Image (cartoon, rainbow, N blue to C red; front, side, top):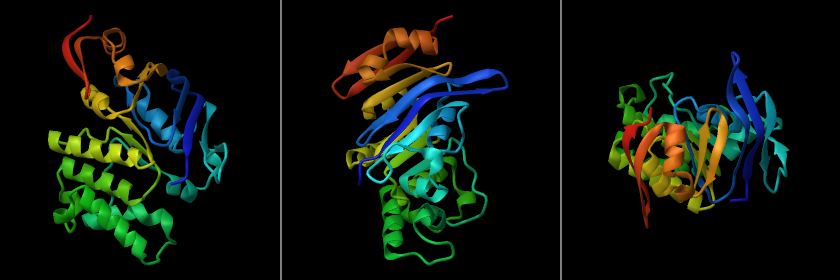
Length: 265
């Protein structure tokens, strides 16, 4: 993989007079699994959509830099170019057609071939690998509209992996999953980063975010109030001021464990 950096610089956005993002700066680099955390309404989904090129900020810019596009404005790339460089997984997605699982996963290959053309050998290998690593081989012929919420989420994640993009932007990718598959999907995202990719994922499970992410970015009322290693971001002070909770914070060799105790009124 070539080295690719995705950067939001001084991004602001408001809707109906409400500030959603306020001069947010965030850079995602090769090798990083970054957890985007914060309470509901903090601006996480809006920032992800803007960094995916799906929504334009009121001010500020999103840049993508690599050997081919040094400091290129993201909105100057074609949709196909963006889709070859980054994949976006929304918070909620309902399939529009009753496709088989393997066919929905195969849509991740769309940016790599012309419309109506057949699948190449590389396409087939990428689809098979995505089904294998997400443990969906036994469900490959199931109709996606018959899947449980967790099975559908794994299928959508498999579509992302099938695309073989360097950058993955995921909005609550493990929200619908049971504990086994939460761990499994976080392991896959971490492995993607370790192999030279980059992942920015909005997460609500703070302990899992601390366990797997090399860096956490804490949003509150549209502002980035902390950005750094989990142990430096998940402090009792930040949890109280941002989340409004008193929590027990246990720092261990394999991460930080957060145990909420009570609300702070």
